[in-house]
Length: 93
Image 1 (cartoon, rainbow, N blue to C red):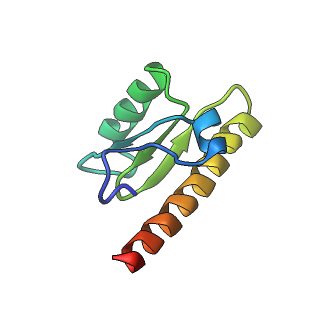
Image 2 (image 1 turned 45 degrees about the horizontal axis):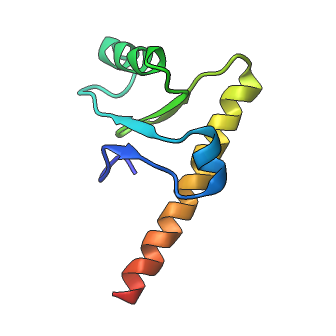
């Protein structure tokens, strides 16, 4: 998703309920960098519970590890649904 979107909006009910909108962050060094830490922290301070970092993956936050896992699992499921929908749409073209 991070390669061709600036944000991800789930199209399934679970995604709409738990994550609503997922920002996609692009940083110069997407692994173990201060830029990455600041960018992800800023998104969490803005109220996002999960984000995608281009060329890296997702980061999530929660009151517990299980809550953070819920956001990650929801994103994974929503992204799979979106991918399959895009594939079917392309086949119909």
